[in-house]
Length: 337
Image (cartoon, rainbow, N blue to C red):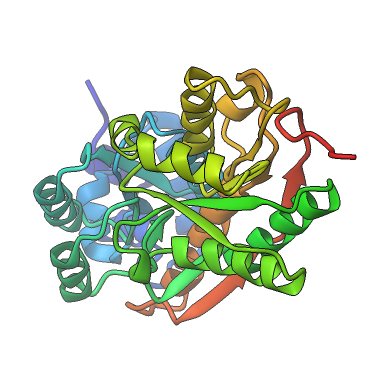
């Protein structure tokens, strides 16, 4: 039978309230009484009621995390950073996956608030205004980590425009002049896609090269298939030799589409990606891509949250942390003579 707080008090020869003070570190206790209580807790293997304790101390040492899909590569990497840093500071993670359902995200936010979590992290590629309003209303520190939309006051990420400029410069230095960008058109005025396209355009303008923009509606291969005719006609008409893609999955889907049309990569056309996801290293040809620091984004986000919690603040101050990146040079780009 599990030991109770009464058992601890009896063995330590102190009152129940003294045991509670030692456990919650709420009021001063004499060194001798504290020593006896701690000894009794260890000897009896007493486990305090964490829910009741959190109501007293206002500390649960829990961080709630809502993810769009636990199976997503970029989400799992961010989550690893969140979890490992959380453990360093003795915080546990309550994880829930919405599978892209905005209402489920909202329900999880309500549930986590009831569980007395000290902060909430949302990792998703969606935009959910109702969720943001609920998190503001809860007066709990929160961070929104989004790989597509520009949302949230605190952001840990990269300079998408500069990185895209650098990748386009890389292709130019490889001898390519007829280069196209390939991005997602949906909500482009509110997403990071506009910065990627802008970086590509700046590099092309700097070298007096013609800008050619290719678009698809989403990461879904079906949307790419809908735009197949327009994409292939543009590539042929503009004599494109290289394509700068805004996501690894888009680049790989494009390589497959090009192969169906008789274009081999990189022999006939070079293709680059963005993200550095696992599939980019195992697909053949291995994809030249931008390596996103997803782990670091998760680690920095929870560090910022824990700092806010330790300062007993309910809101995370606005800040933008720019992380370094690198281009992974692989086999999907051919140097032209």
